[in-house]
Length: 326
Image (cartoon, rainbow, N blue to C red; front, top):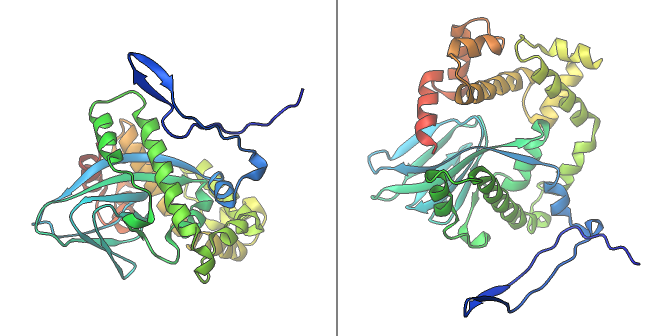
């Protein structure tokens, strides 16, 4: 007997149709895929996990022409109706119906409505894991800062977000799994669109950046992140991390700049702020208790840090976040 290694089986075209009350097989095709034959893009995306934090329909009225702010996680915006100008890192992006926009965490952005009628956008808030590799994924997606994906770049997904809204409103079983599946599907399409052009993008070869994950620097940052997560209730310093990893503070600092494009102190504060939002959304806990759990010296210290990073106090930010998500 010959053994075959079957990794994935899928059926294409319409397999069945209803004919006089019976299901009749009309056309089918089975694909057998060997894992060894997997392509670079599949290998790349298999190294990441996506955690959905929320989903909602964003409606902007004409009188709310300009919005400015920060977000604590990744945000995928799908323009359903209207026109929008998005400004990120000093660069303007013009968005039409059917386009997608990808926002990264803790980067200030401005949106300006360009139509006299209401603007409708669907958005998914999500995170990318492992923590220390999310910059690699974002760089692969955005291709030198291009955060907008035109409708022409991607396959049609007409009606998919309306279905998600219906599932959320009806509280249908499996909604979270459905939402995760849609997010992953869209990200694969977006990566594929940029992946095909990566040979022509100078200095933006996503695959080459992904190979950097095997370096000593990434290994140390990964261990540092783990240490930070295990000591969230403490005032963690770069000295503590470097001592635990038996490396110099200067070298560890350079590792964070190389891998995460930020110093350790900034990363620690951003991570704690993201964790505080997660705690306030999921737990019956006061802001004072959150501040204590995350190692802040006082409620004032926590609120001040939160406002510095996200532009609003914890109470105002959380009120807006809860109103924004289904």
